[in-house]
Length: 453
Image 1 (cartoon, helix red, strand yellow):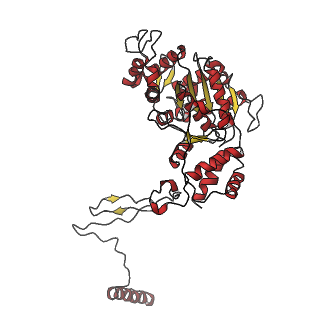
Image 2: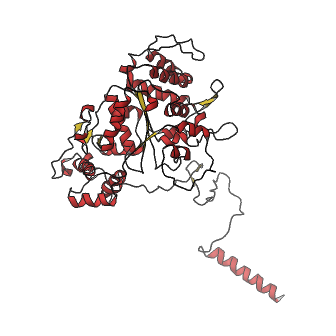
Image 3: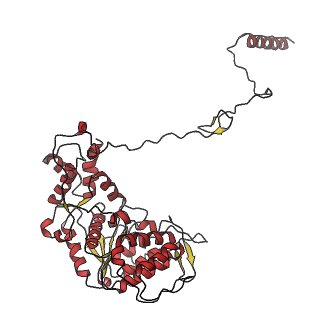
């Protein structure tokens, strides 16, 4: 009885203090809400959600990610307040085929500024695209390996493309993509028919639609074939207008295309119906391979991606081989020599920076490159890829720039005022030594890194 009276006394005191003191919190979650009263829900989850004025739930805003902001290039600061005391401007000679001799080695030349330039229509690799956006004029330095590649193109202009299947090799950042772009610009200025694939990884990374074709037993890629036809026509329109078909061409659900039809009309058939684009692209390349009026250059960057496992899946979710996709298979047939151009060449450039599509063993052995990991005779090789890589010629790009070549690169970025510091020998030698002469590291980790310092 005594314990019960004490408990009752404490309960009375707590109830009295609760009613008299406003600072004591009470739990009222069991009380019923009044009519017309909106009950706010407690935030659920780690970040929770907020209530709007209408009573609806609004998702919480994500925190802003920290981005790598860099100062605006000095070349884009046109206000007189930002003008420096250096009167230098980027005045370069144009990239013209007649100038590309040993005399202009280690000199920078600017690319022409036309609406139908190949790299403006076909696109560019990402690293070159960013550099051209930073520079006021797209340009490149002529190296000794550039003259070697041009000599191969001059010889290939009168030979079958089976004898001129060249792949540019070298470590990351040595300038393979720039060399392929220089070869493309040279052929376009020499009145060649040019087809450029700047990012071959897009052919195998499952970014476009694919459909199975019972006739060819391959997976067609109509969107990419349509885009390739459109760009090929825009770049080579003056030359394609002079060409006509030599054989009858059959296209599904269309009347046969008779011999003597202008090649532009054949391309327009694929542009009118996206479903016909893969068949038309195959027929167009076959027709320009027979003619001997214009040489043909097929240039492919990220060349190793054509030999790697694709990200496409079939109806059983099994990986589709690259040679079972219409676009990679078409390029592989010309790279292997199974199909060829009467006059022309096939050039490719390896990308060592893409770890998603590394250099496969079959292509590494065909180009006689060093192994990056232990291999032996019991490691499985795909015979189809070995066949497609057979006969490829390697053109090694030097791993480092020579001092005159690096000095030209340094002069371009300094005269274009992309680097705020004044040019001097100490800065040049410091950045050149830090990069070990590597072209990509010299620009990105050397010169441009001073912008965010």
